[in-house]
Image 1: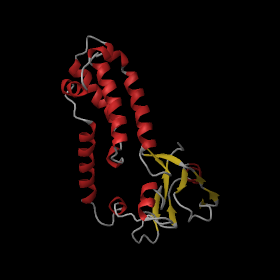
Image 2 (image 1 turned 180 degrees about the vertical axis):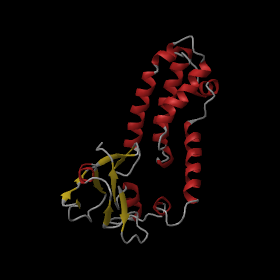
Image 3 (image 1 turned 60 degrees about the vertical axis):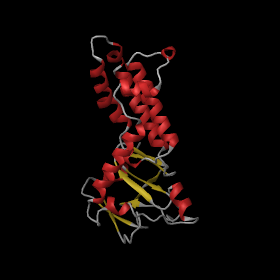
Length: 223
């Protein structure tokens, strides 16, 4: 499904959008939802006469988006998915036949990739970094078979595992993503989203902080 904005004028999403699709009507009615971030939607949005469900959060391309506009919900969901991926390989971590180097490569490919998916757009806060770093440190200690009474500092742990602090890794991903985005055409939606000016009541800082000022739609199964 394609979402075509009408009257862009620098806003992240306009007040009204025209939906154009070539898929079956049943698909459009069941797999499209809307999330309002402010109170300007006075009339329900419909697709071919059927109202679109209004939700408080949804998953788009693997990332959880919520009305709060923050990253806490997405980071929590990423952590759960990464922990499941780590648990699936628990026999590998306990095995003595697999080298530590191979285990660390498997950890980066199968666990960290799940954990850091979408981290390019996460809010860079100390609490978020601490939550992610704690998860990675706990996993590394299990892979290296370290117990609490071994008293190995985290800095030594990262050095032994050849790992960088998580804030350095995420910062590098952010710079790579912003460079890729800025090379896009000015008319590209991703490029224009960088200049999004939230609309609504309250100060500009408050609107930006709470993520109000627009609504998002997605094409895919409900979360």
